[in-house]
Image (cartoon, rainbow, N blue to C red; front, side, top):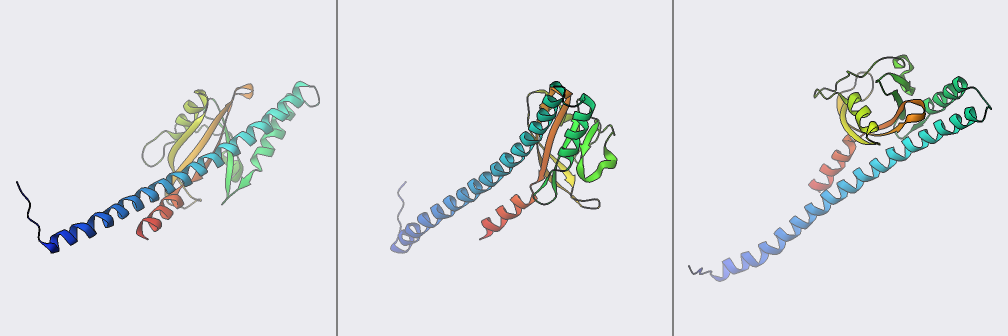
Length: 189
């Protein structure tokens, strides 16, 4: 099969190939940028969880050295973690290994509740997944959660670490809807 192209067809091909290549590489760059932003978020929440774990460890060692009681150490540690805030109202939370909420800074009234069967709008038992990920040594969980009391459910990403000395699971979640919004804006541009 022989393809006979006139001059107009050859020019069109000569123009289309570089244009399509530029579009392809631009889209690839946008996807890479989205991944970089998401990785930055992951790193940020992981560091927040590590900071909270170091607070727990500080107070545990205070109790171990006899400077304060075990009960006082746990209460002080929980109060310090409860007070952590960053970003747009982001916070650190703590569960025990059974799914009982131990620390929830913005809504202290939820502390003491068994949330092990709590589901997100997609049906994911996200607290159970928090516990499983922590039990395996830590990691990340994606889930859907409302922003604010009356907010619509939106994607969220949590980092989790175990703190076995006190039977705790320490986590921190951030909303990632703005990552997708930035991705769409860049893609459209």
